[in-house]
Image 1 (cartoon, rainbow, N blue to C red):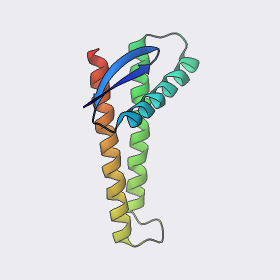
Image 2: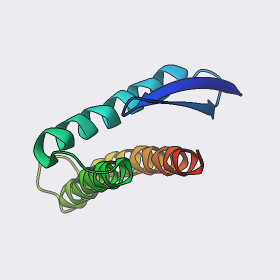
Image 3: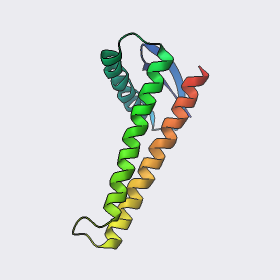
Image 4: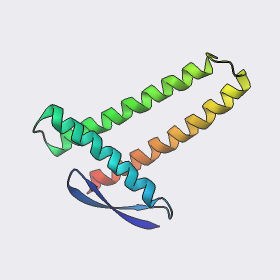
Amino acid sequence: MAQVALNVNGRRYSVSCQDGQEDHLLGLSKYINQKIDDLKGSMGQVSEAHLLLMAGLLLADELHEAYIQIDDGKSGKDNKSPADDEVEAEKVATTLESCADRLESIAARLESH
């Protein structure tokens, strides 16, 4: 397992990940930081816990919207065959579930620090 130093909201966290996933994890932390920076601009001064909660909710909302798009794709709104849509939707769903699992793991690690 590899160790990655992540900076989230100005704080350093050491997180374990599978070998080869370091850059991906760094990219995710940058995405989270962008959400936090956006929130800071709109919410003003709030606690770090509140910022992390709000960032998590925004990310969960994005994931929810992606699931809705998958469901819309399953309803056959394009010219692809139903079999093509199902295969594509399963691939996207698998990818989103993997991302959700990673985010939950990261959140759990951040909460324990």
